[in-house]
Image (cartoon, rainbow, N blue to C red; front, side, top):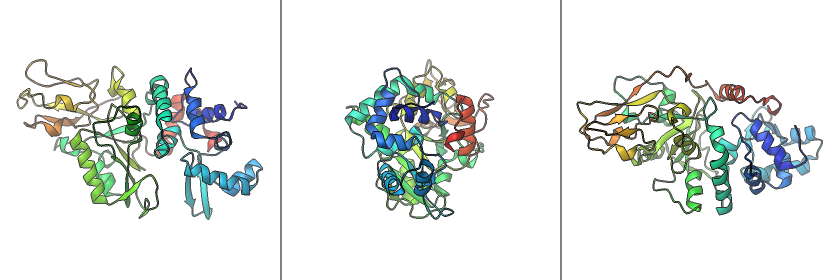
Length: 363
């Protein structure tokens, strides 16, 4: 399906990407694209491939001049509208289409203003639940290491510390979700510069970034601990290999966790293999843990903490403040939740099937 309106065409393309970009009745999804893109930028973006092409390849395929196309692609890259990387096989830079989330939205960090923040708020309220409730889900929860039962063996891809230890470059950026809420006059009480990025093999990867500050491995691990001490939830891409970020999230700001927390049974819409367990012999009912749970999964109806397993996402931030060490993370069987997809391509394939879309023309 095509349309003469470049923004409507781009919206359709973004919703064909497995991540999704659901339309909403009042057209806010179009207004967001109008804020991010000029008509010319939107038109060209809608013609790009997820797999990426060089500027020469884009120009040749679209029957346009490379002298016209390449400067426009570079401008779009500088505005966080498209993806780009240096291709050794092509001997040149490739430019590619990005999902709206995770992708275009996060790259608007340095451009976001109050108008954009208001548009996003309207969109989150109307349409984003559709994006967070389709399997496989976008986020998986990484439990706080100190909260895990000592007898419990967990996979390396479920350990935040392991991901950072295995990387070669590290960076941190301000959380765009927290910035969005601050622009609406609702500043977050949690630390805000806590979005960790990393790459496995390239050194000094973030040195020239205008949006991500390069840091050391030790600084990344320190920020991870500070985030969990503050009560933030470790989240990352729901795959077993190929991780490049750890978001430290809250239900007051994070677009995904906000959508999940508002549901009756949040656990059904987040990838987690863990749940909180309470040792009734140790628990004194002191209530220290209650405020730490952002999902309202804990209560003390009598003298011992009780876990609502339909709301607990197994993050573990409550356990690390228990003065009696009465709380710990245990593994729980969830047959309806298959293992995380092996990698990004596997995730996109499963997600496309779950949403009933065919992104093959975008590859």
